[in-house]
Length: 424
Image 1 (cartoon, rainbow, N blue to C red):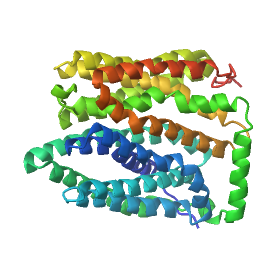
Image 2 (image 1 turned 90 degrees about the vertical axis):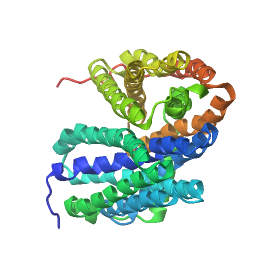
Image 3 (image 1 turned 90 degrees about the horizontal axis):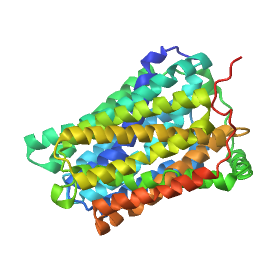
Image 4 (image 1 turned 180 degrees about the horizontal axis):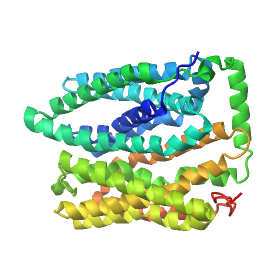
């Protein structure tokens, strides 16, 4: 039996729920650990390992199809994410705050990755093709809203609560209790709002042997594609400078001026990175999609390659200039995120291009695993490198590493018509 729900009742809230835990794990944890006195080396090492669930996500995604319905997985993971957020909140003020919070961040990361699998699959089951096309922009918008809410409003809230409590630990604890309550509310709401598509309950369940056979076949066909090693190198190294930059740049914005940082407060960081930056990222991504759909990926590849190196130049300027005013910082971060959003379009379009053909869904999942790995590996040692050479020289090194991005892009062979709108 299938109960009907208006997609507006669940699509926006579902993708808001998908975005919040990812940002909590990847961004909020950085700011919190920095405020709690952890070194940049330890912060980047510990939080980069949290990419691992998204790296190995293809290994257990078939079991989400085999066991239970996608609706069940969504609700179960939202409840687990809420419990994990509560666990982080509970452990922060305690003696074992680092070990405890990392444990619950790990739990949240695995639950969030599983929630991604189920939510994306449920989206295709709960909507017809016309609705899927209509709501693709809506789901992206609410994912961005979750990003602004998490890295903007929540970080700013932590700073405000700290003034009230006079305690960094208790301020962050209260913020995580608030988000935990929000997620329990989302779980209760989705228990009512999510439809029950007949396809979700009536799918043929596969055995472990069938899943294993399909997974091996997927791997074989993935590595039989043309330009496989060029493609893998592109997936791993196109974003290598960003993998070095992304975590250290956030720490740079809030680090003390005496340490070479910009000394932003939590509220200022929330405005700069969580609001202005997200707007720039969104606009850059939209523009990238528009020009690629008009002229094709091949035509815009090199402008996008140049655009994705723009953030590295921006942070060199900020590190050497160290502006005291918030206006130039906002302008620089907007330009940085706009360039990244535009340049990242080439990466995502290439993943789609590489995944074409038989098993395209499974091949795309493997591509996203390489994407997560490309961020995880550089992040493991980025903090140690920064502390060894300082922010200024670190950002210069990152800018020099952009040579790798240009090299791996030069070897790509892309169909000139890929991405173009075909008039019928």
